[in-house]
Picture 1 (cartoon, helix red, strand yellow):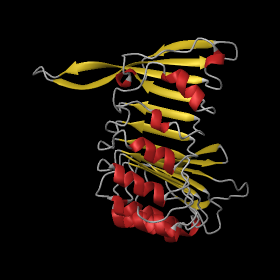
Picture 2 (cartoon, rainbow, N blue to C red):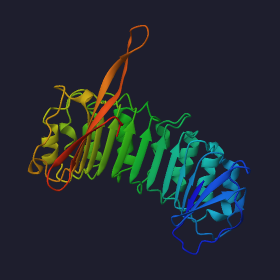
Picture 3 (tube, rainbow, N blue to C red):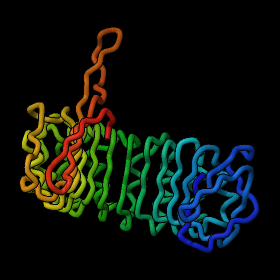
Length: 324
């Protein structure tokens, strides 16, 4: 487990229980790392503001730390941790000042999420990545005016355009949105996004149905965009999109695309900085098709990514095998 604090006076005494007591744990205080074996305890008033937890951490671990996490502002629960519904429901009362909650591979439910969004009045960031359990639109029907960052990765496959509109009403002040795996969305989602969140700064849409099947013109209402990712949302993006985007989105710094979405099979890439204004980084991924042993065509997999970076004088191109 990693623990960080902005309080330089943080003092650790006793023993901290992290999963199996026989295993060592990582403790981070103001950037300094300590290897701890066995156990240690954090007392009341320890000043913890950020907490990242993983393997072996359970609801009971959180309950034992309750006196020390009352001033917690950010928590990230990763792979190997097992909070469960009881742990999530405990967060609002144990950590009433939370501003950021990030959950990876955790069991979630409508009742747990409802408790979080209703009770945590300071919540500004909510990320649910590859979590499992049954959640519905009911979790997002409540007003969350302070929420600025929302990431839903493969947890809301059921989301429709109507559900997306409800989200714009309950979270009207979002500036960063990531949706992955929302298979029922289509091109009508674009005007909902641009009219509902005209001040959007970062927008990531991946494997979201057919959002870009008819191009991306309706997204141009998000004039404040600085970071845009569009991947596997429908092959309707025009060849000259990068040049158009730099004009329509005057603050755009970073664009990530995939050749699978190119209407004509590729994109025109800028040669001069003047053509794309503030755009500094362009990432264009390419996939390769694959077939199973029976000859059936499977979903394409990533092959390579072209990264174009403005170094102050010209664009440099780098071809990477990694998916960025």
